[in-house]
Length: 162
Image (cartoon, rainbow, N blue to C red; front, side):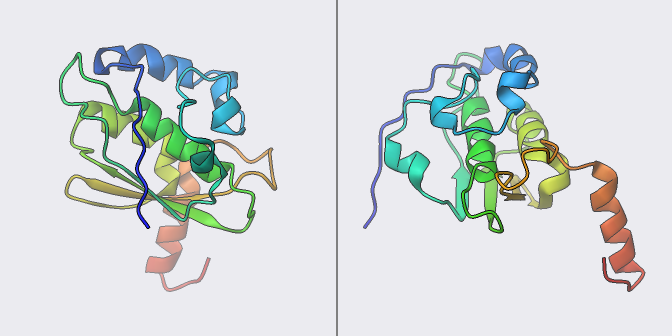
């Protein structure tokens, strides 16, 4: 069964720079349920079922976001990342896909809040991230160190397991 819900987005593309700075604050980098987050970027008006599901895959391809006065994807990208980090099933990971990463907002916000260190692949305008739960280790950094991903790739190229 397919269910859909109407979502109201409160932010506009022209607010992206200000929201990027807000998103770097402690109220936004603390791992918490986005439904109750104090972060201005968190989408709080979704039905409770959306927050309660342990998502295996999240696709960000809305709202429109292609002109300055349009609702932007800043909150959708941020919330997708927090839902992935907030999974109760500690060992599980969430695959997050962001479309239209050729646009500035989608590019910058996905790199910042889904983290370059969790990025697995980009194909054209679609970017794929795999984000682990942070609930079992609240001291885990919001984003992994970039060197960790690079070192892992280098070891694989050299034929060594990491």
